[in-house]
Amino acid sequence: MAPIELFIELTLMPLIAFIVGMMMVLMMRRIAARIQRRIGPPFFQPLYDIVKLHGKRTQVSHGLIHDIGIVMAMGGYIAAETLLPVPGMNGIAEKGGLITLLYLMMIPSLGLALGVGQCANPNGSIGIARALTAMLAYDIPLVIVIFGVAYAAGTTNLVEIIATQQAGGFATWGVVEMPLLAIAGLIAMHASLGKQPFEIYIAPAEIATGPMVEMSGKYLGGLFVMQCFQLYTTSVLYVSLFLGGGTTWFDFLIKSFLVLAIPVSIAYLFPRYRTEDLLRLMWKWPVILGLIGLAFVM
Amino acid sequence: MVMSRLQKIPVVEEKKGNPLARVFDDLVRFCRSRSLFILHYCTGCGAIELPPAMTSRFDMERLGIQPMVSPRQADILLITGYVSIKTLKRVILTYEQMGSPKYVVGICSCTVNGGMYWQSYATAKKLDEYMPVDLYIAGCMPRPEAVISGLQKLMDRIKNGEADSWQDYYRNYDYYLGNQQKLFGEDWQTPTDIITEAKHYELMGEGTLGQHTRLLEQHQQPLEALEMRLGHKLKEPVE
Ligand code: SF4
Image 1: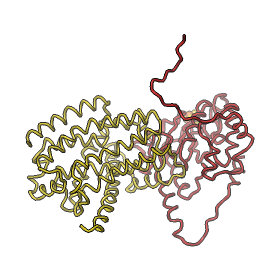
Image 2 (image 1 turned 90 degrees about the horizontal axis):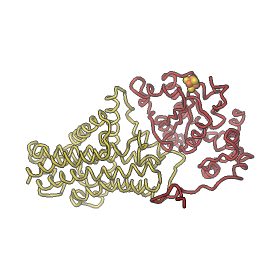
Image 3 (image 1 turned 180 degrees about the vertical axis):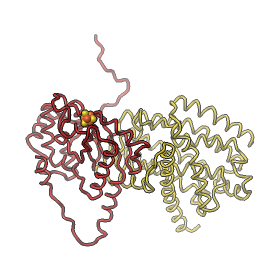
Image 4 (image 1 turned 120 degrees about the vertical axis):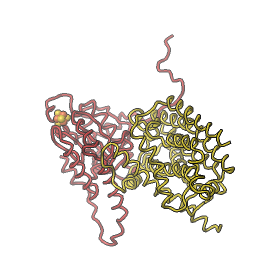
């Protein structure tokens, strides 16, 4: 591939991810509004929020690590987007593979932990401790699921996994071939989004939005951008693993929005678990489902 | 008193010329007006009208207004009712920690002139003596419709670039500090250093420094970062 072509792809992929991610945030807030019988925010609301936060006059920084932490939180996801194939663009997905992607998806939490650490706010520290605990909880089923899919496909190359599924049609989609792994993956994905039953580290009523408590202006704006990327990355990864990726942009976007709509609609119906309940739940059901699924695959 | 001070703020004439030169500013102003995070400091009975304004009946989120939980994240400080003197201290601390541009909205008659607590010794009567207030919504208590229409007025003023009374707190800090000292005593000090901030953001005005800030400087304790260590003992053991 010509370097200039690669450069264009590497620029376009995060950009598209950002725009689609903003629409996913909008969808999430609209679904929440509909469930609560409200009308919900206007179409450009996520954009308004991000522009406003970056346009604040006062930007309170708590030090260098605070700045770097936010950049890491965003940068981890931006790097992850270049490893996620979308229709027509593969970026560096062939060279990266699933394991690198899994590593990159953990960087944001670590960056956030660094940044919040310097704020020296007790709510933030509690929040980040819970966020890392939650990561420990959902990463085990997630790793089992990803190992299962990679084992079944015989490769960790995401492009090949998608190509095999597309060549064989619907019957070879991951969700048909490995339904148990798909269910476990859905639960793990829901937990990794940090939405309601698993919302232990935001918890506005208890620890005042945890990691976000000291963030203002562009720092909070950075986290809003990060949320867009997070929704996009999680749902696109799921679509690539289990729903055969996308041949065209149309079915690709429909699949990713539909996949995301499932955890989001569940989220706004439930209150929140405690940390130990989350751990118990995540290490029990998705892990059991995942291991049984793994046994079928092997 | 306040009006005469407000009139002293220099008005920057917009230069005619390239119409696209201010597009970016206009965009930011528009986004500011359409995305308001409120911090509702529920001081008095007026707070009871906010849940209906936020939830399904009136749904403020369609205007881009949503509640936030910490002062750093918020744009609007909603004071919903009477402020007792003890509460006012916290309100001022909260206000100073918010990132500018910030707006203060006083809901309820009690914030305008003390309302039915006029004769009370324990309430601060007029909120705008202690911090610049952008908008009052009078009523005992105002209905959610009134709250929303008031906030819409604030949105219009933000869009036109008129709602900049937060700068007044920096430009006339001496006046506000004087009133605060009158209530809380001469050794009143907040953890936020407004004068340094005003210098940093180039918002020094004629009224920033004065006799009250001199009084503050006399007994100001230097701010120190909280010490973080494990196994911190609250009390020294008695021998
Ligand atoms: S104006 Fe009326 S409703 Fe509002 S705080 Fe005062 S007494 Fe309560």
